Image (cartoon, rainbow, N blue to C red; front, side, top):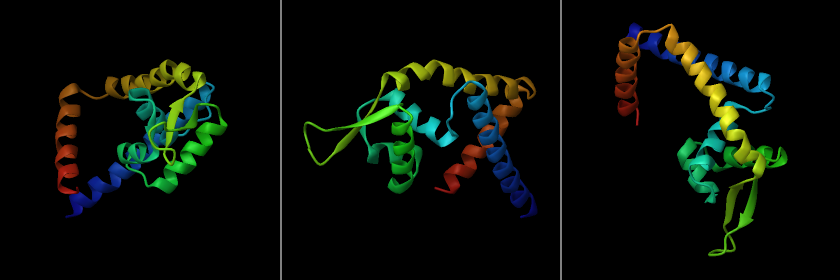
Length: 141
């Protein structure tokens, strides 16, 4: 039990540390974005013109928090809302030119962090850790 508690504690610390590193790296690259905002942009880079509910499911956030993220990204010029042709009550979220253009720079920032992390840990260790984390994730669903 103590080992599981310690594992969960370290997972939480690693997640917070990763988020801080990513946020700082975005700032250095000239982007005032949070990790959550970046995750939302990644959903739109995969498939533009989606509704808020689809985004909420993919990033596993409630509609209230997704609305806050969308409002911020809209104010910063990364995306906009348009009314669906099929259902006037439904808004679709679409990337702006700035949102599209930011993809390469932001993914390069994330990839550099991953490269730096992977450089210090053996590939087999990463695979073992991933296997354990997937197991925990399946148990907690």
